[in-house]
Length: 594
Image (cartoon, rainbow, N blue to C red; front, top):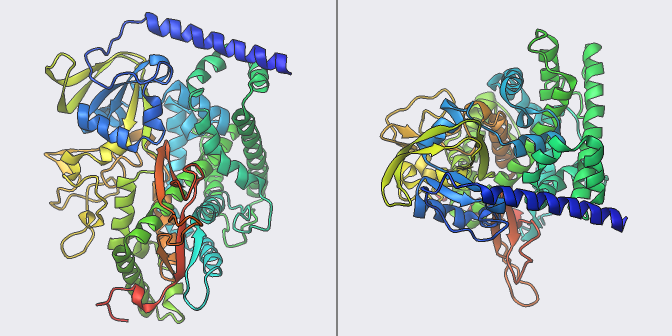
């Protein structure tokens, strides 16, 4: 076995040496674009951009503008883009030119199968045509009350930890919110429960999904080699190379993919059999009644023409893709919001008061009895709560769960710029020539922090920017059917970012925008309106044996990773420890009636 590993390492070293020789022999076509110097001979600037890189990413744009030259692995030159006009061309106007990278497509196909994030061109358009109606507002309205019990169960678990006398208990929210998010997406997408909120039951699938993102992040510097390996080596030899490579992360990733694949195939087979028998299937209880996303998609696919119909492998790919995409990002967003509420007690009290008023008003209108905290708001009421909406939008703008995406130029093109940049020679240029095969990094973070578009306080978390002076929600042309009402939020001289959600780039835009963003928004709001009325959140106040208080810090490692800083924490383990207690009357706005 050691000999095989030596052989594998030798092959990898040869591939690496060959790529370095080829890249060094090429003349730079981006010499006129300014950017930081190369920080490392192998990693370039990537380790600073993708590893705890929030401040570095924002500083890049502040120093060099909306287009920056950066160095990727092996010194490869790439473009780092945050200019709104350039991004409009990339994700909307010329999306056929700027496609996902081979590394992204092939890597996702190996992990998830032939889902939306692993296909290009006509195949991707066909899949999206099939899935768009699945995430319609009508389906979201039907789904909301069906998945409310998940939020209720999460609240019950957390409140059971809190003493009745109102004393404080420190709880690490991350594992519970992760379990809740996975249960949400599994029941909503598959009509299947993995019992993730029951800690007494072993759950191999949950553990696999939970460790997928960390495993892939640990292998980030191997991802550029995936296209070459897939093209040049058969499946047999790729599996052999996996066996030979001395990497626990690779072995773990292989196990994770195997667990996901087995579970998905079993659920898919059960769903298919139930559809053929005109019945519903799933262990999430009879309340789903075929309203889950997979059941809707299977029925739509069965009634489609042969040209539009998806293959079984494509349908399986959608299952894995939807679950992973709907798990990590939503968990991160809810954790971040609760952390903000813990830090900003005034915001928490105002939100709790707004939720109480909305639930009481709805209960009165419907002649409902029982505690107001248990009232379930219908979809349109939930989504229309102004202050809740402002908090969610502002959090997703300032702290996008995914901060960076990549594209590659399939042919030479020219990107026009809204804001000219200074070239390496000192002249101002208003467009950038992009050679064929150039990789571009789309900076969602920098776009959402653009001071020209969002104001001088763009990096400040201020939910009031989404509200009118009277506290009503501003109706923006945000891709959700609304039109501009004279507000300038997110628009400057007719220039705006091409995002599908609130004029921001968090869920991207164009033909590859996040297809499930309405579901994610709905889930976040449902969880908040269920937890906040009964639970008060505060930053941890307890000290360790040396008197150190836990300071939560969010690392930007591709995804947002919350850790506890030394000396109270190890700065590595993902966690969100907050002080929780039962809500009392003092936790509402003073001037709001009971």
